[in-house]
Image 1: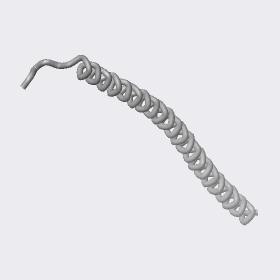
Image 2: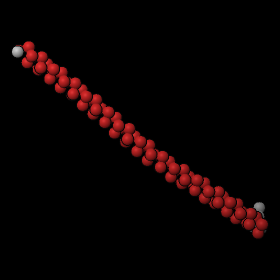
Image 3: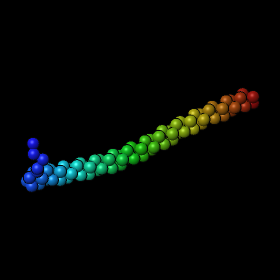
Image 4: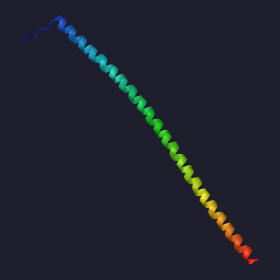
Length: 87
């Protein structure tokens, strides 16, 4: 077993390490891009979720408002019926 490394073997080892480093850099760049895109998508989903929640709350408020109007109309009609029946 010889511990001596030829210049050719050393050069090939350096080339291999350089290639692996370049491949790793490319993979890291792609990962960074994917994370950035995911975060943007996540923010968009959160914005849409907030808008949907607001619309649902507005819908519920309108529904409650209409229910109160119906009760008010019924009360006024009842009072008018009582007043008309007294006369």
